[in-house]
Length: 216
Image (cartoon, rainbow, N blue to C red):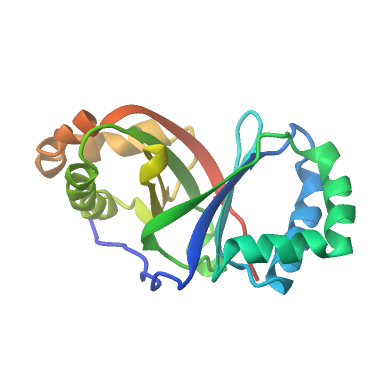
């Protein structure tokens, strides 16, 4: 076991937003260049992208982290841009109408680089939190280094306390099919066993595979 944690990136200034929307099955090829256009257009209006992931099962879910000094002003500026309406019309056939954008507080942020993502998949985890947030975070912060010793590198983590939602991602060298076996040693580690109290803070959770989207 080795500590393989990625270098942390400082929390960006302004407001960080977590943007999630589902792409229609078999539409990823058509959607992807349009998302690159959306990212570039948002950048023109002051939005800075930090990480993005696309789910690989069922209806692929985009998980996109970006920030802006004043998101409401950024959205008004974007909406006033004639290119935005035209782009939305081209995006519409390829994604569902379940867009949700929420302000979040970052716990961890890393940078996507081709050399650090080759041969690895990301696992997105979403927890519905109950009870004391600080109690949950105190345990979760102890879980991360244990996971990383087994090769599961934390990529980002974000809290949305008003919505009682915690979202984070880690990666590992393997496939979704390899994932259950890859976790067995981690869950048997005494350092992880003593942290089982984390489930006292989780009303529900979701786990899904994804690929990091390059941002260059």
